[in-house]
Length: 254
Image (tube, rainbow, N blue to C red; front, side):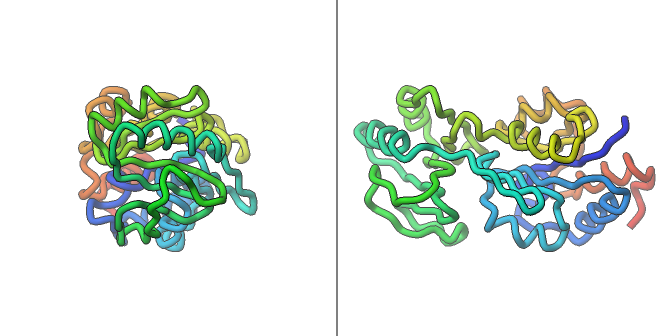
């Protein structure tokens, strides 16, 4: 395979469970970059929570918020949920019960509960929404919430479950694969020339489409079944080990 791009999910894939990026993994990624291989992050995180990792690695592009926010060089593209569509959906869902809700709007996470780890802003006026670009609506996961949301979703939106903890709702154009395809096209790289690493539902399309789809051991069963290769768990720097073996054939090199 003539690999020209390495694309990786962050949480539970490249990052350890404690959300850290090891010095070892960062060093390997920088070493791969020196071979003129594009290093791309594709994550459910917003741009603001990727900056610390980007400062260490120097990603060539970022696909954030599952493709609702794409940053490549000096260009940025957004694939948002129309304000009226988002409010109608929230109104329909909230009519069935009380839920823990958050919304990514213009770089701010508004939530009706306190999430200090995500620097959320307390907001209690759902189903009404603040003004701004709506990138994602998020509900805390439950089977009941998932069923209600699926029944209320308009054709222009889709939902996906992350780590059996969150239900994410986005514009149908805002998928990791669509964002990745946009970035690869900008770099004039085909999906067949890319390696993708992932672990969860949002990664399935890219796992199946890229030249080599790699699942970490802690991935959900569906992702491992779809992958070309299953490597070790995220806490073992397994993405870095795979890249060293693939590009340099020296897995023990530090």
